[in-house]
Length: 440
Image (cartoon, rainbow, N blue to C red; front, side, top):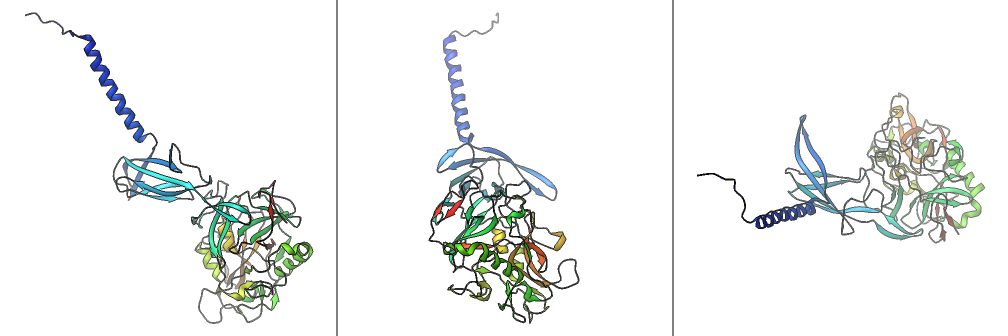
């Protein structure tokens, strides 16, 4: 028998079969692509005792305002992560500082995680309607646009103070400029009572992080001595931890600025809100806050633990004018200084501070950073600072590069007055450098 190569008797039928197979493959490919096309692949590893185990791919899908998109929204675009869900029992921990997901409980390959983003909430304020982030930042990290910062968070965030919900500006914000009394100011926050707290920023508008002595009202000592706990006070009385009998050196300079520059604009300045110079003590031995008894004030602990608090623990340390319905009523004029807590909220990272070996992260492009060291109103305490055997009274300051540290009360540092604008004024402008808010 002669063997011959097989030849199809029906070439047309064979073509139809092949075409059908190709179509099935194409449909299957499209289905698989649709299932995974909107996901981004990342390698995830566990590192245990130096051994690395590849657990496979994780695929992320992004929904923005309930609409599937190919990329997640960028940081500071007005969106926040509202919820997430993963297959295989995995979960997502969201890092706002890095603006990135961290997948945990990952033990299987081909895990899918879906992230849902929604717009930040909007609130009505004396400045109009504002977009506000309602999550709590990581205050151990500095926040600004500079590459040295650990977070690039920028915007308006909310927390609480003694009067309710307060909205504070964080990072390298560019929408908190105010032109008032022929001077430029930067808004620190909208207080819980709706008043606007702002800090002096010069006779002309300056960029974030711009180094200029114009951004402060000269320099001054906090007090002329540093050998007694009383000299950490914005006002003080010998032998009293919370005394208000004598004005500090810096208060005198601040009052002089008010009378020479702000007095004729007093109708716009709030006289009820106060300025906290917290002299509460965190150590419990007898006599703290007087003489040379070692004392660590409340602000010391909050700075080390990166835990800002906008309430004032003692009425005696909430400096207000006589017409106020709160505080110590000891001020002649409604002007004060920024607190270390407000500095932490603004984007300066907290943590360990120890003199010349300050480990706190800098924020060189923050709206508060001026290239000059300036005073806060917050006492650190009376103790032997790092590297010293002598005892000193110490107050917090902000450095030229934007970190915080304790400083001798006798040091000469920048003065940046802080005032509160009434909540019933008319505001114009958009708050930018070229179109600052104005008050009428």
